[in-house]
Image (tube, rainbow, N blue to C red; front, side, top):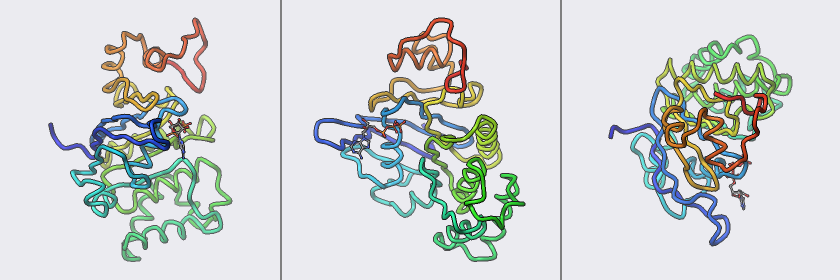
Length: 259
Ligand SMILES: Nc1ncnc2c1ncn2[C@@H]1O[C@H](COP(=O)(O)OP(=O)(O)OP(=O)(O)O)[C@@H](O)[C@H]1O
């Protein structure tokens, strides 16, 4: 099997002894595609992100980023990874450019090169005209885009996004989803996108990993997951895999439109 940008094997973590939040999770995220980590509240998505970024140490299992083991070669593994956490981490009283320059400096990117990269990322995220504004003045969708621009400045091979659309309205959500898919296609980076929202999956292109109560219940393309469950759609498969009772004839809504 060829090397994927992210390879997780047998990952386990328990916050309390005997109560695993993750219990032997394995998954891969390949370059040029979005892998959607789909799970309901409490499935273990944020725990997986904390382990994949080295914030928590697993009780068992491995995380490899472009072949670099996160425990044994944390510097090399983290250098290839960009992260957007669920909770925004921009400095509200700095401008867009100041936030991005600060992050570039932390990565040791020289100022002139940092400014070139900042210009490029802001342009493709349609934010060039906001560069001099304080983060406080931006709406939620634009703040998220700044976080994505920041996560890409050191040219990672892997981008981790933990529920990046939380709090955004529907047009902002759609815009963010489209931007991230375009980044994948343009740069060939791998994206792991955690969500509980089925309508954030592009059934034509995305891979899906369904996580429930700390274990992977199914994975693969949408067609493969539906074949595994016998579901008529990914929404149906998700209900079957997470044992949520299906609501007959329910109208699709913003949180779970059938794909
Ligand atoms: N710091 C913590 N201490 C103890 N238990 C925790 C902690 N963080 C998470 N948990 C528990 O671990 C399990 C997985 O939680 P986690 O936050 O990883 O799930 P999630 O899929 O990200 O959920 P959500 O969609 O609600 O963010 C849950 O049972 C949760 O209560």
